[in-house]
Image (cartoon, rainbow, N blue to C red; front, top):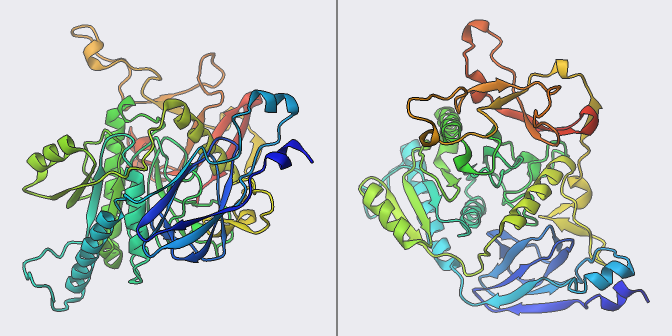
Length: 469
């Protein structure tokens, strides 16, 4: 018997009482399959089907919650194949989740109450749209749909809150398709890290890996897949930190907001479903006509929002989940690598031993595999720009009376043949064509173009590209 077979753990079951959740965290190079044996359970608002094996990998950190009680079965986690020498050096790799436990204290009741309140707002907005009489006790209640901004410090679980609220909305059976907006470039949403995006959601967003935190928007996949129904609108910021270029960040958010508002002008039914904005920890722009601000687990921020916006908007402080994990810099760097690999090649999670029919978010593994194209082309066929200088000191650091040679918003042409161009292994956004009418062109038009795909510049002038829907 091999070393891997001897150390492989046996399948075990967890029995969850009503309103409890099983929380787990996976190590690198480890995957895990969870099956709902009986009862009802969900992962961040996405319901699990009984008898299906759900795969998790890429250092996933998630929780299985149940309202009524359930039994879940854990398969033996997948272990990477190591030589005896490496096994000796990495005895800590056991294949088990690095953390797993059942918690009786969850914020799900508070999140469910929020969902009910937002449902009432959607229903009132739909009645007003069709001219139906109101049935609320308060005839003066607003008929605006929920336009929700989720705020909070780093590692507070903002993205999880957004997913739960969106998943509950699409599971309500009313045909809602809320718009989910991601303006956190460190996550990338449905694209690559460094992107800002928005997409209407028609089916629950699964959780299987931090490589696709908001579900998978496959660029080439069978049209029957629910993931292929996600058609995001994407702008390229190009940095993981929001403070790297605040002026560019603000402009792209305004562009995203303008596109969302234009969409609602022509899609009044879709407008009723509302929108939810997932933000970074430092966020100070409102381009989406927000009417509800949710503050996740931060008393001081809640007081500031109440003082600033309480007379105009509804500000609600909601609890932070005890399962939120503090993420360090090295983990975030690994997640960015997972995201880029998943964007190019699709979701690939090794199957644990003995599992033959496993799914990722309910979809077969073979249907989530992509084949990016690779080709060698001349740089003469490309126009490459960098927005602002590669490194830019704050204005306060400049000498008195001095002005920048390159502004934060200036597109600077890049010559790949020049030393120090910074293009090797860089990720580039492939932008939509500019306006074909020369009279409609303007100097900074490149800042307002949406993304159609991404390119990775590799050694030997090889460009690997993957397109988007």
